[in-house]
Length: 304
Image (cartoon, rainbow, N blue to C red; front, side, top):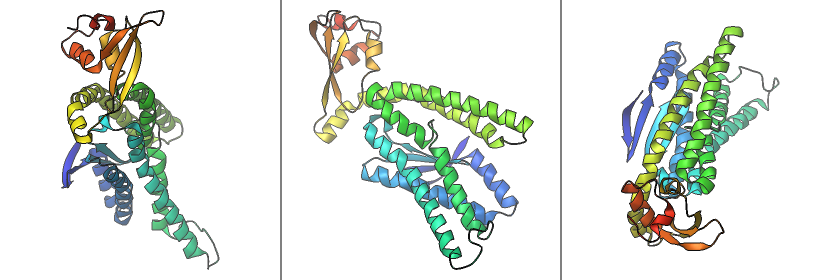
């Protein structure tokens, strides 16, 4: 549903089919200038992500432009510290808020010296600029993927759950919200003659959230496999101890790992007596050899 149109450095620019349809409708209806304002607002929003990613030494792999905004996909987002992803996610909405505020101040400045302050339609392009950026701000603050609000929420959950489980939970929430939007939008069109935007936005959220969920497990494995490269780059990685029950299964414990640090698992019995420790390396070796249902206590004496 998307195709590449350009490349800026290492960042691929993708255009979603919904953006093309919106462009055809606006330009065909004689609103070419409004379309320019809309595109400019999208670029300012995405520049916020790019600038934040640059200062956090993270590359933006691709930017996908939709009719409802744009989505910046970070290269290796799965090994970012959660606070880094949160900053990058929120930098776009901050830009939209600043641009909307600048539009309001400009409008007030133009009308302050004349009677009829804030007369609707007096500066249509300026009013459109404010509405577009407020719309981008509202949509991107939705707590669902692929929008910035969903990525920010995932970053907060990643602190406790890890990237994979956090993505899974946010994806479920996003799919639920997308389905609700479809239902509300359909009901609104039938009974009130309103709500087509929800009918369009809902399926896009469901599709994107499903894609994010499917990629999360794969990305988490990639991140863990890239541990040596990150250690060589940084020179050191934080180590964290994780207390686990001896009957915990390997496949469940792997989901607890966060790629930004190395784990040592302290294995205890049901009385909280320490049985021994298992390194993350041993846990991952068991997982990749197919011993996913093995109990962690079995790795203490005879790792596979």
